[in-house]
Length: 165
Image 1 (spheres, rainbow, N blue to C red):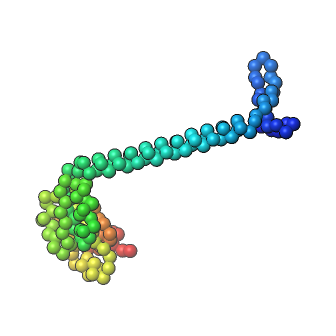
Image 2: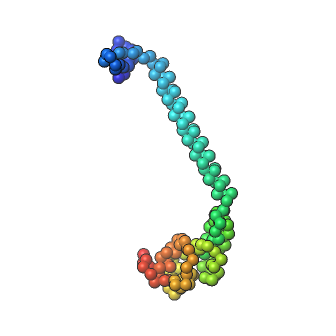
Image 3: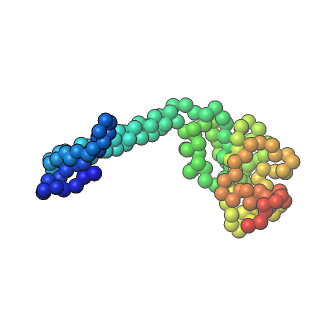
C-alpha cells in the first residue's frame, strides 16, 4: 500500500515468515518517475516489436502468394473480367475470362473451377427467364463459384428453391 507519511511517499510492505509485521519503506519521486519511464519504454518497445512482426508476416504472405500459384485452371464468366482477371492470374496457374453472352457450357471442360458473375437488373431478369449461361442444371457438374446475384439468377433460371428475393 502506498501512502504519504510526514510529507514523504511511503510504501507499506507486509513481511511474512516468523514475524508477521508491516514495514514502511520510503519512496522518493525520482524512483517512481524512473519506474514509469521504464514501463513506458517497455510498452513502446513491445508495440514496435509487434508492428515489425506484423509487417514481416504481411510481406512474407505477399511474397509467398506471388511466388507460387495454385495449380488450378479457372474460368471467369461475367462482365467484370478487367477487375477479376489480374487478381486471379496472380493466384492460379491458368485463368481465362469470357462474357456470359459468349460462353458455351462445353468450353468449361478444360477448367477445374468456374466463376459465374451475374448481376441483378432488368437485363439479367430478362436473361434468366428462359435459360442460364451454364445450360441445363442436370448437364452442369463443374465446381462453380457464384458472384454478384448469380445465385438468385441461377435459381430462377433452373427453377430451384431460392429463386425469390
